[in-house]
Every structure is written in C-alpha cells, then in structure tokens.
Image (cartoon, rainbow, N blue to C red; front, side, top):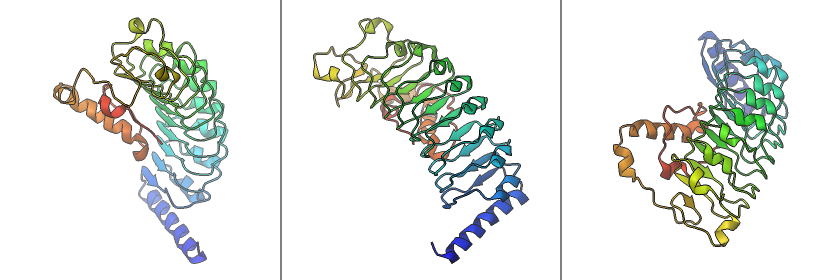
Length: 315
C-alpha cells in the first residue's frame, strides 16, 4: 500500500472513531481496515456496546480496550493476536466473543470470569486444551472450537447446563468425559473429524439433543443399550466414514451410515404447519448466521429444521 493510501485509510479510521465519540454511538465497525494496531482514540468510546474489529492485522490487545466495560459484543477474529491480557476479565458484560483465526494457542483462565458470556467462538487458534475455568460460564449457550488440536475437553465443561450448540469438529479428540449427559440443554453437538474410537454413549442421555455429528471418527459399534437410552428428541446421528460403516450394522431410522439420508417421520410440510414452526425456522436462521452477523446465537425455540441443521458449519 502506498504512503498516500495508508494516510487516507488511517484518517478515515480516525474520522469514524471521532464520529462515534461525538454521537455516543453504541456500535462501531472497524473490520477489514488492515489495522495493525488499535488506535488509542477508540478507548474514548465509552458508550460502545458492540465493537467489530475482525479481519484486520491486529497483533496486540491493549489493556485499555478492557476498560470499555459496556461492551456486550466483541469480534477479534481473523487477526494476528498472539495473547490476551488478563484484564479481559473486566469485560463482565460481554455476551458475544469471537477470537477465531488468531495464533493464540492458549486461552487464559480469566476467560472463565466473563460471567455473562453466551456465545464464544475460538475456531482455529491452535488450541491444545480448553481451560477448566470455562466451566464457570454459567450462561454459555454456544461454543465453537473447530480446527484446533484438542484431544479432550475438561470435566468442568460438562457442567454448562445452558449450552445448546457445541462445535468441536476437526480436532484430535480421542475421549470425552463420561458426564457429558450433564449438558442437559444440548441440542446440536458436532464432533465430526476427530479420533473417537468409542461411541460417546453419555450424550444419548441429553434429553434435548437432536443432532449428533460423529462422522469421520474411528467408531466401530453402537452402544449395546442404544435402543433404550437414545432420547426421544433425537432427529439424526451421523456416523458416516467410521469403521462401523464398513462392517455389518443394523439399520436405524435415526442413524446415518451412508450418503443416503434416513427419511424423517415428519416431512417439511408437516413442520411448517405445526404451531411453533415460525419460531423454529427463526431459531434455525439465527443460529446459522450467528457468526456472519456477529450476533449471539440465542434462539428462542429449540427445534430447528432437521434437514438444514444437520450440516451446519460455523466459522
């Protein structure tokens, strides 16, 4: 970038921030400005509630940013951030936090002090383990840690009784805590492309679970008591590309072994005519677009369209 273009860009950024200060704006978007550092003037935006800094080249999060204590949404994904300041604990009002696609490698324990956090994305940050303090996030509804180096999750995480959307695909997960059934609100669990050798049977006891994605693992068999423990709310279990698919298996209407999708008992037409249909489709749309819109994925209803939600991916 030429010096002239850089000068114009930097002054444009400052003009946006000045306007936000003057008008006491609650929302500020500075995404995709190729910023290497956060301008100090931004820390004067004390009325900010939603701050979007994704798709820049930011390397350091200044402590001053953590003094913007009115923030409820903070997006820092697609930057070059290597560490978080411990003072991030000061952002007590954060509801939505996106740290994805940064070379962080570590999540500091102070993340567990963000007591109002509902949606948290940390996809592809080189993460090898999730800190046990995440179990303190009592309001967490959505957690995404795709494309990391995880081999398991901490026992404390299973105490997140409000968690509904869990995405851990493309990791190296070999085992899961036996207490996964404590996640009583879980609706959608994505564990595809990991190294699970045994079917995580405890998940079948999650009474609200509808979609369990286990494709591309190392699973060789269903639990012996599968028929008796599978929850009545379950819509689909995806077991494609597991060793079980190469041996003799018993067909089941809820289990997907091949590209041929089992026919659901309720058709799309039936879903659209049920009383809560509009709220279900609204919930589905919000969940699918949550990351793109940088909004918390906290839909009001639990029953998304099974033919769409089965292949959800998030950034």
